[in-house]
Length: 119
Image 1 (tube, rainbow, N blue to C red):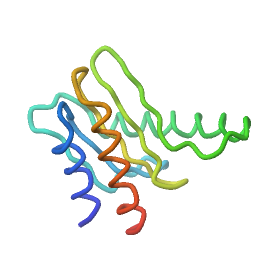
Image 2: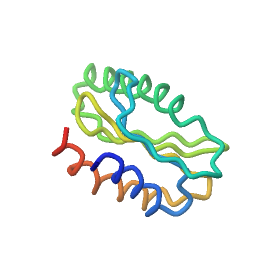
Image 3: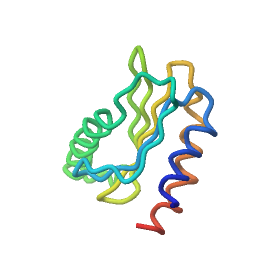
Image 4: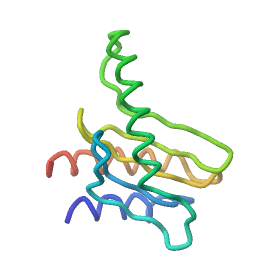
């Protein structure tokens, strides 16, 4: 299935990536991939960042600044890149602090149209 391939490719092609998921804003995951050694509750991350993405979109709508394409959150332990697929779905990629953010953004940008085509 394209969804499983997309999240696996995002992780495998991004140095320092821990896991990725494709999720709806309703919190229902369509696909996820987590490295076996990862200590991360990927589904919980997805649900929380779905809420964050919704809030950022509301702010963007109020400011009339256009569609939100991507949000990146950097913490001490993780970097999470959230990429909108459409108004209902997003892809999230979690990396360790040493992860290659630029490569992760690129890989997600390439995967997004493929995912959108299948939704």
